[in-house]
Length: 207
Image (cartoon, rainbow, N blue to C red; front, top):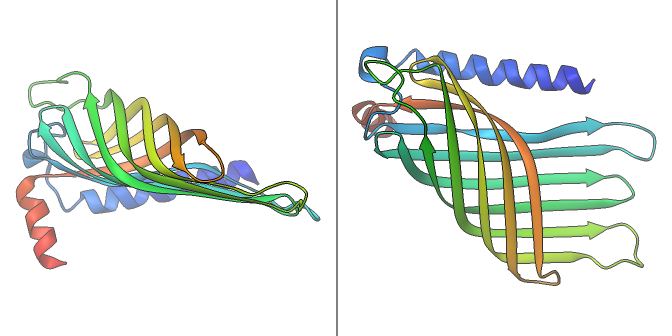
């Protein structure tokens, strides 16, 4: 069941990204060109396990919008949402938003096109976590404050302006609340589309 869900999720993300990419031509969308805009996101820790009196659901979403400050170096904004629930045990919600910076490797050919690139990412912003436990003898916990994350991974480009990526990511959250700090480690799968500056402006005007 789990393998089927992972496979369906991957196919849906890939198909959606490929269809949207058809609105942008390869000639004007070199993937790492300055002023290129990236729109996409990641899904991680997605699993479900349904059994009597012990159902489990977990999903993490991280949408991103980035701008290529200069070739191979990007900054942008992100949002985080992570939901975990174990029946008769606990429910955890993690959320946040902030800025991220990303650097890609290599030039990859005469026009900057390469099918695979390594990248590193650093993020900083606001984050929070609420944990509720079913056992009344144990306390609930909350954290609200600074969230710092870092990770890195591999991006595969089936087309010049579409990437599918795999990224391990670590997030440290500290601030006010009943718990001083919380950490989270996840392995995320994502899809991104890279638009030229002119195309991004056209889309924003149509919205």
